[in-house]
Length: 306
Image (tube, rainbow, N blue to C red):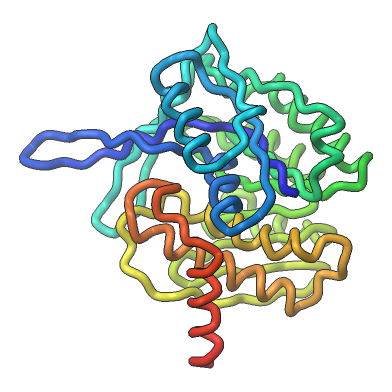
C-alpha cells in the first residue's frame, strides 16, 4: 500500500475567450493527484489531507468519493478555507500558478497514526506544507516514524515560487526533508534550482528527474539512465509530473523488498513517462489519468517498435 500525505485543493484553470477569462474548477494538489493516479493504475493507496468546511472542500470530498478514494483521512476543518490554485496555460499547455492559501486548511494537517504508517510500504509526502514551520516538523516526524517501521519515504520537490518567495530559505527547508527521503523527484528546472552538485550528492537515494518531452532519468548508487517518452500534443501539463511519479512509484511498490535493478528502474521510467504524457492530453490534473491497461498498451507498442 502507498500512503500519500499533503495538500488537496482546487485548480482553477483559466481560459480567455472574446476578451473574458473564465475559470474551470478541477480537483488538484500534487499528493492528491499522485494518489488518484495510483488508484487509476490499480495500486492500493490511501490519502491524508485537509480541506475547509466550504463549497470547495465539499466538492473535493465528493470528487474523491466518486473517484473511489477512501476519504477517511481527509479532514474537514471548520475554521479554515480550502486552498485554491489559479492556473494559466500558454499555447503549449505549459502552466503558471497563483495560490490562494493564506492560513488555509492544508496548513493544518490531520494526525497520522503509527498504525496507518505501518500499513503502508511507501509514504509519499507533499511539499507545499513545508511553507509552514509546524508542517516541516510534521513531515519530518512522519518520515522518521516511517523509517522506524522500515518503510520507504518518497518526496516530490514540486517547488513553487508563488509559495516560496525566498529561494534560499526554501531550498534550505526542502533539504531537511530531502535528507530523510529514500525516493525523490525533481523536474529539470528544479535540478538547476538545487544545483547539479547537490542532486549528484544524493547517492544513497533513488533520484527521478523529469525532462519534459525528452522523457526522464533515474540516478541510483552512482549509476544513471535516461528513457524517452511518447509523443503527444499537450493541452494542459498540470499534474503531468504527478502522473509520472505515480507511474514510477507503482512499479517500485511492486518491487518493495527486492533489489532495484536497472531493469526495474527502467520500467519505472517507462510507466511514469507514459502516464505523465497521456495525462497532458486533457485539461486538469486528474480527469485524463490513464488506466493501467492503457499504460501497458503503450509500453507494449514502444517495445515492439524498438
